[in-house]
Length: 207
Image (cartoon, rainbow, N blue to C red):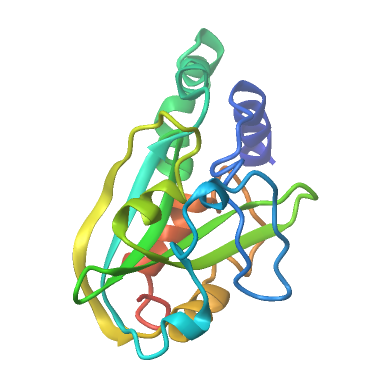
């Protein structure tokens, strides 16, 4: 179809995957992990196990963002003469978003405990989901950075969760998220769709 042809053209112009190279974590035994996790280098005790956060409830949510490696080249590809003829910049931003990685974050009332949720494509081309608890906001930030010197910002600011949630509750919401239950696509089903779905999506799926 014409839409498929346009998608292939955009893929050729900007082949980077939203969230590629994302840090690894295991949210479910059915989920694959990847290498090179940023938080592997964090001090002991920063990444928390289930037993360390029993009774902790997460009451606020936000979406963090940072640029993908090579963002300037990706954006340049969108604005080359061929892209302009196809009107790629307009519809690619609408479908895919900017060339940035987004990750969902929730925190406890005392701002001590943080939960991050991330979505990308694994090395075998399958969906990869990570839900991880951390001690301190700096660890939640570091977990999503795509390269060491990357800057980060709020894609969505802090807002109250619809209900206070435990880590187990958040893990469950990750796995029923519509984005997770469809094949990863950097065009229309990527990390940005995933994070926004948790933050402000359908009522039965939001945190």
